Length: 48
Image (cartoon, rainbow, N blue to C red; front, side):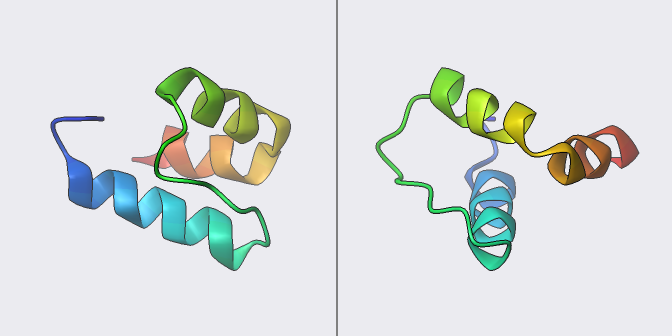
């Protein structure tokens, strides 16, 4: 994910649009925990 900042930004934007705030300073582990709590994002990732 770090190699593709644009993709990461897109994910952050998607989360924000769903009402989940994500700070850029969060670690990837924290981001994944946030994502795992929200099933709709899991589906989005598996489709890519």
